[in-house]
Image 1 (tube, one colour):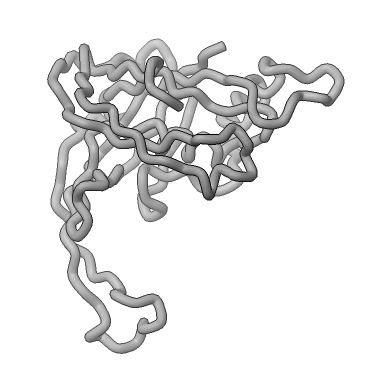
Image 2 (cartoon, one colour; image 1 turned 135 degrees about the vertical axis):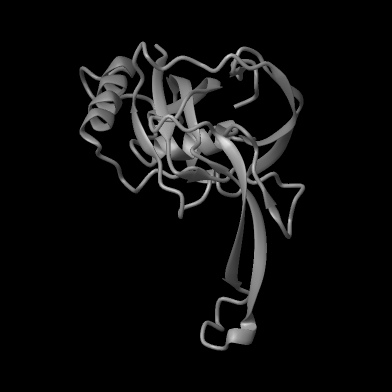
Length: 209
């Protein structure tokens, strides 16, 4: 039971783990970033999200998605917020006008569905209603909390860009356990070595999630 949604914003940054000091964003969000975005709208232990594909589309403003360099002043240590010397400048290569068409499916979660009359379709409709009303548990964001995302249901006008090119390796999080309580301690890093965007879309249906 897949569903297609659109997530866009003014800025986005899905940091490549290989770049530690200076942030560099992926062109597309990895599955872990998409799941985090969706779970901020609706999360229940009875189901989990499976990201099937992510595609680049034209931003609603009409502007093309591009990279831009942003320099920020950041606090070096959390306990020193007054002394100006405790701050440092960091350069980030982020996305400007990111817009994505995301196809996501629902799968059984760690806890079985026990409520009478409830099934996967029930949670799918619940999720759709929350998206249509703009309801969420916390504000969805595009990689970092300072870059909020506008999430809506996709329409026929949301068409992937006609672009085909290699994107390189993608690193994303997979869980070693299906126990949702242990997710925070049993996360492992998995790398998809050679990702290619075909006709604006990256197929993630075969990735470990």
